[in-house]
Image (cartoon, rainbow, N blue to C red; front, top):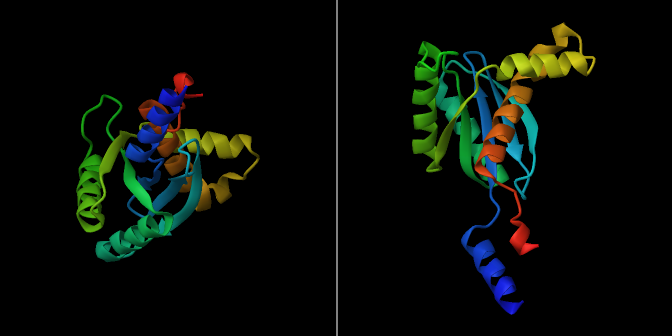
Length: 163
């Protein structure tokens, strides 16, 4: 039994639970979400209205990374349904690369196909009027992107051997 506890404490030291920032980057707005400390859930944070100067957007996101103490950033990658790179995906990837260079944090590009559509559906089913969606749809999409990333990576999952 002592071995399992020792192994578990070594694993926790080597791999502490880290928070991630999730982004849904658009031309006008950036939806922002963050994971909880245990990596179990993603929560919406805010919608950042894009400024004319992209550097200001990058600095705002870098401040959020410091505020939440994130270890990595998950950026929705808007590829075509076929999987081909779209013009928007190319712009998003360039933005993500600049954000990674500014923050020094790892960037994880994550397939975001249909997340905005799914976000609209969630808001509609929750009883929000279509006119109200614009304020929060990007946050919901960022939350879906981040949650999908965490689930696929197994972040926050506890190994049954360690219980």
